[in-house]
Length: 211
Image 1 (cartoon, rainbow, N blue to C red):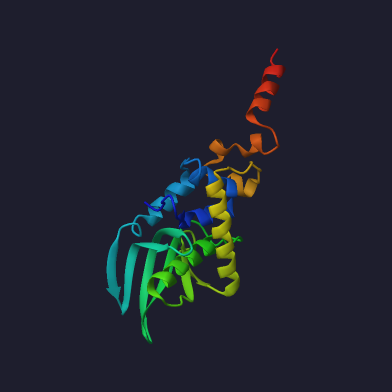
Image 2: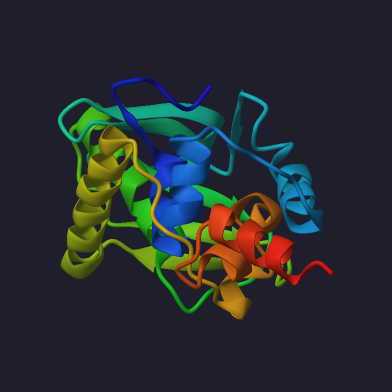
């Protein structure tokens, strides 16, 4: 279980940057629905979601590793953490598995950076980079945790925590590229509610149009 009442789930950060309303539906209203994309993503995670430790070519790999930072108030589970032997000992590198392909926004990178911040808190070391593995491209993309990404991650943690604590779901706004691929589109109803109309107003219109 990735969530607790006191700590912001790492997955919520990715949800928030993708769509704050989606984040609230999942983490405030506790709603979920699956579509082809989420099912494929779940299958991709099957191996990484099974806790195990392997060692190959001098790299110790831990899958489904619990992470947390009490100072930042975040917690979750890393798909994979690789511990590479470097000068001074082992250094952790978080690796996150994603179903699709690299995206224009930085939601995946923020989730990965938050994992790095947890690892830094847990092991007392600087984590300089991690990796995102995308299922569609079958390629591993290196992510450097520079100051800009770290600042964006901290701001996202703060904003996500405030929204979850407030317990309020943002109003809907329809954006085809984002909404049509979302598994929660039927629960969210962005086309219906994104025009500033509530469900009651829509129902009144339908009744008025009846012969």
